[in-house]
Image (tube, rainbow, N blue to C red; front, side):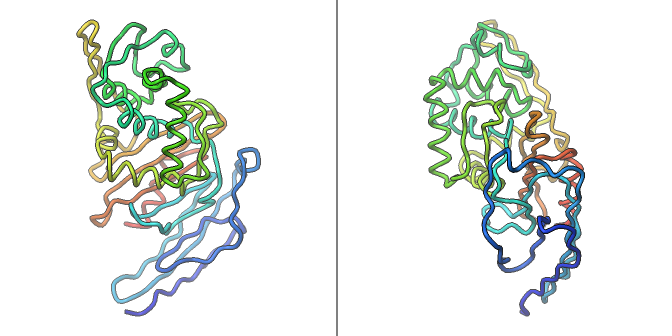
Length: 297
């Protein structure tokens, strides 16, 4: 087989979206910056093309991307065939809840009964339609987090373990996974101080995919029911992710606060392989995900 030939045909900025097919691409100095330094660059397009050929394929891809950072890779591979600022830190908003779900499953357990407190209900937002005094198993609160991005559910889970201890566990898990540019200050993502990088988030996704595939299984459901054990009343949750219902959608998580703009983690089945896309700081995350997906279609 002939070695891949990689040709970059368009360069609009030194800080471009890099498209790679084949072997490793050399880079200069790694750029890891804080949130203030990593502010969006306004209405700027980053575009690059690639032509690669070997005995099996001929590929051309020219994506346009206006967000802060992005990567695309096959799951469990440490190679981004599309990337822009993959090691730059950025507020991750409700992408935080993926780590919250992991810690809840590992430290609390899915069947643990949890009382929803007044403090939890006072969290910003009403997603999940929870009320103080209700009692749910942890798995139902995880469903509320993943389908409706309920902040109330995230706080209730953390309180069940002790919020300070729960956040400590989140950061320790990040360290275990090698997410060295990631930090959590609370379990919801409401704080812009919860920050990570696309490459770090990919490590979390790999861990979930291998150990807790039910998390992504929940996240691709159109709707689900959760049961308040106090009243024996069921509540219906409707998934807000626009990719839900697509036959190739494996799962993912949305995130948004004013400081982060639109964030999105998505997994798709392409060419009989799971493809991971992570977009941070976008103004139209679904459209840009669709554009990047064309590179594997």
